[in-house]
Length: 115
Image (cartoon, rainbow, N blue to C red; front, side, top):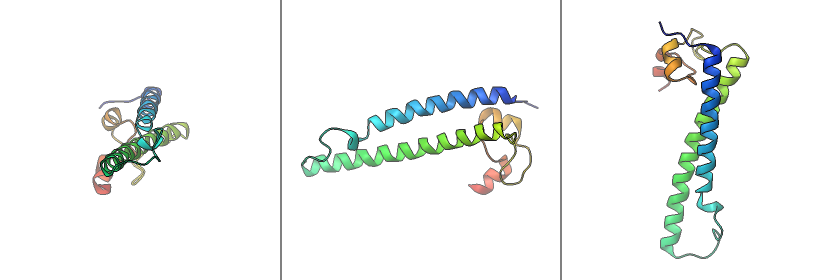
């Protein structure tokens, strides 16, 4: 059985949080609505390109924010000494699963049910 230590998990999650913050900053820097002249008149082609770019950036930002929230939730669980406990069934999450996905909130069985 693979054992993951809480201090190891916390370090991994903190690193992941920092990486996600960098990714989020990069995504937001690419947001066309943050560019000078976003409100200026454009051709239809420019508008279509900007809308497509904005849609892509919004989707990336949403996915990154979800990951960020999962990491923060796991860090809070460490502080509350509930890390490694499945949110659905209350059983212990397999340490091998936590080693692969340290922000996992569900055991593998419950994760399948959620999906």
